[in-house]
Amino acid sequence: MIEKPLPRLLLKVKGVQDVLGKGVQVVSDITDLDVGYCGGDLVELRKPDGSAFQSVSSLVRYSLDPLLAVSNPEYSPPVSLWFGDLSKADIPIGTEIWMLVDHPVALKGRRFEYIGTPEEQP
Image (cartoon, rainbow, N blue to C red; front, side, top):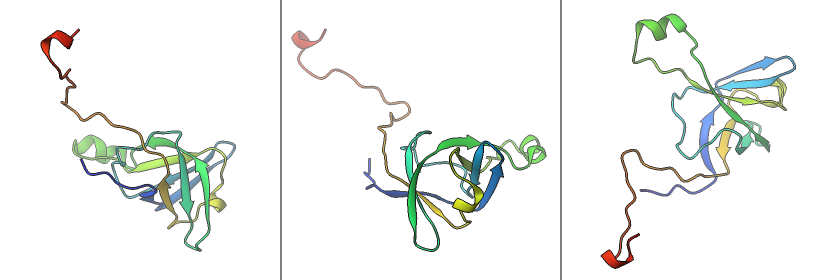
């Protein structure tokens, strides 16, 4: 497994939707996130003007076109993140969202076994 250093780019903002009283939702053009990301993680937002700040985000997935999703089983909706304490003015299109926290991820189909002599096994 290749270790990726932190911070690392999670996604680039392609769209922003402000929901009154609930914060802002940012949409990317990717359909899958880095496996080390968990909703509620602290991330860094780097604006196109060079400024940066940190905020806590949560993961949201949705379909921009439900009819496309029904007619095409391979359709995967873009990833979007929700920021409850920000507004649309805080996150211009083109802002990069960077991971600051990493989480260990169990690989699918991988089992962990006890390694030692038979006498040491429980």
